[in-house]
Length: 298
Image (tube, rainbow, N blue to C red; front, side, top):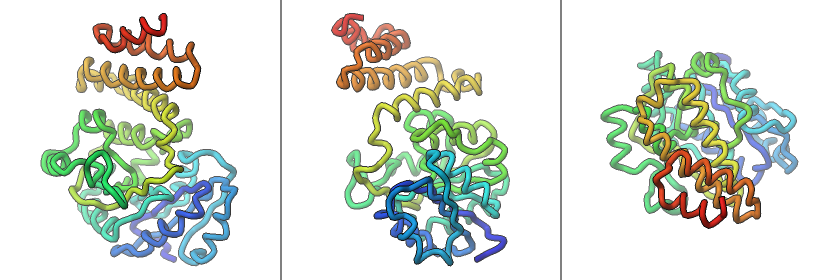
């Protein structure tokens, strides 16, 4: 095991024993081999311990009581010995060129806080496209650079496709441990505010769709997304000026609207009414939001 690796790869996992071995295999088969692999078991209750046995000589392993993915990632990064951090989900796959592509850029740009690239959907396209970031947009980002508007509009950063400077990660305090779904968006906002961020037009990981994807929890995803946007505006007053108040209000209002509909379907009428009132407050001229306020008697 390397004592001074160039990259520390961190996989935080919880009850993914059926998927984790393929993820680890994809990491160990990298073209670039100057890395350590840290696996943090976040209190799994399945047979994660047993599935890791064949890899014990290749990984550094940490078990902790279940504390959530952000806390597990932070725990892994605290063990990291390299200057660059790669954070991988325990259900996705690294492309063989993953570290080679990202580290090549990072090595020649040591002041960069984060460099990230594209991902592809494994098995079948999603959203009518093969890649997570559409082809034309990916080429533009690589050519023109990444703006706050790019990060804001589509939450395009996937940490599975990134390398982050450990100095940057530590300086920012790592992941917000109150978040379980929108932690990538939150961290990318905070990195962008303080450090240079770069993008490479290559696919470096594969997203595996399955029933256990955390993004399936729509209510939590929307609530956290709203929280992260409000945190961005509170911590960086210039952000609303850069983005423009209409863009910010539009995105927030739409999330409140989606949240309201989901809450109403669950029979939580009072919470749904509060959410649609907030959507309407942000976009008072929206006929759609006014219609739902009228329909729900609020």
